[in-house]
Length: 223
Image (tube, rainbow, N blue to C red; front, side, top):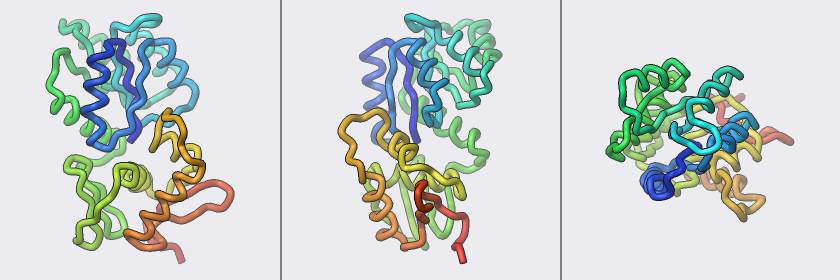
């Protein structure tokens, strides 16, 4: 899952990124509202946004209002020190999906983010299940036909994206951004390598190549 973190406090942002990395999130970080608005309006494939309100350049509330006005429904978790009831109501009315007051416990941030992502995907349970594979984002456990399967962080992230959207065709560029974010020096064949490893660890037909476009994980075996 790819998360956009918009936070101008460098120590807090670093702590959040460090805390989310073991959860297999790909976290991209921006420090001001203008850059966040440009990224969100530019079609970047984010699964959720963690948004501070007190941002330089453009207030987080304005970012939220503008993306909602343009029809962007990406889930947004607001982080803020504004703890008055009126501020929370204003944030929710502006389109926030959840609201977390600073200071907060990292465990609560993780739990709220997991719940937010489940709701956005219409899942009552955190566990994803497809084609005899079970993936639990909370425990980071993966099994196939009841047997545990060990995955690297990138493999887990890629499989989670496919299982969250069975039947959806992903381009290679989209998958690269979902798995690596804005990281530099990503090998051109990185996604192909990860797909190969997943097929080897599960079964060859797990992920189907759509020639000239990308990859798809079908909900059932194709004839």
